Amino acid sequence: MLFGIDLGGTKTEITVLSDDDHEVLFKKRVATVKNNYAATLTTISSLVDEAQKALNVTTNVFGVAIPGTVSAITHTIKNANSYWLIGKDLLHDLEKATGKKVFLENDANCFALSEAVDGAGAAYKTVWGLILGTGSGTGIVIDRKTIEGRNGLGGEWGHNPLPWMNDYEHELAKTQHCYCGKQGCIETFVSGTGFEAEYARQSGKNILGAEIARLLKSGEKEAKDTFDLYVDRLARSIACFANFIDPDVIVLGGGMSNLDALYSVLPNKVKEYIFGKEFVTPIVKAKHGDSSGGRGAAFLCQTV
Ligand SMILES: [Zn+2]
Image (tube, rainbow, N blue to C red):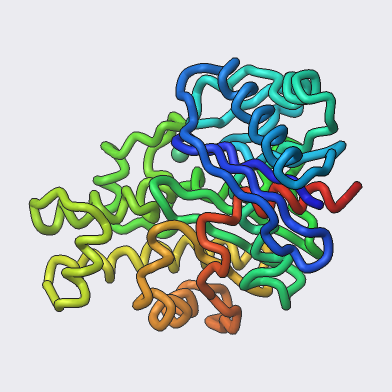
């Protein structure tokens, strides 16, 4: 059996999958105790114990999908929006607390791995998974192995500048401060938060993405203008990356991936920006939705 934990900012979830057909044997979700590192360790240990008891098995290993990554220099957590994890040696603290071997992996990488193993990217060699939610995160998987990178930065697409900015976007970038310390990051434009912010600029109304999606379907002009700008920015950002690694499939997850209109217009828009104007890469919706963190974390254990 494969044990995986999705350690999110608001919820922590355990998923246990069968070895061969990846059937979900056990799943439990609890609220994440914020700003409390000791509680994070206790929550994860308790979930693993509970799953073991329920399934009447003992595991020697489990994987954890984490927000952020592990520093190659300090071996502690960095780049996490769950700030109470930053600077902590989560790997060894969890191994000490549970007596088991632990694998940690960035949550976007886990998403990409889950989709590459048996999701929307299963038929492909190089899978690029993009989570477009509150923030943006991406992961690259080649032959079912995540590309972590020497600095833990594999797939950190969202903190590059938006490519080929126009004058309007250059002005916006001056005031759009990203939490990473830079301005004009791709994430600030193509996340769900960025989509909502653009709609607010177009319409003067602050509403949630799901409501904007409803207005888009009803044909509202401001929603359509926002959507067109969003598609163009996402296409530029995808083209820039596809010029570099040229994946075999692009899998979209997160709240923005539920905008069905994206899939018909995005590939042609990417074609306008990509080198050589040819782009045959499928852009598809994730199969496993928000289960991907725990599933991908469980698949980390397949290497042992
Ligand atoms: Zn940034």
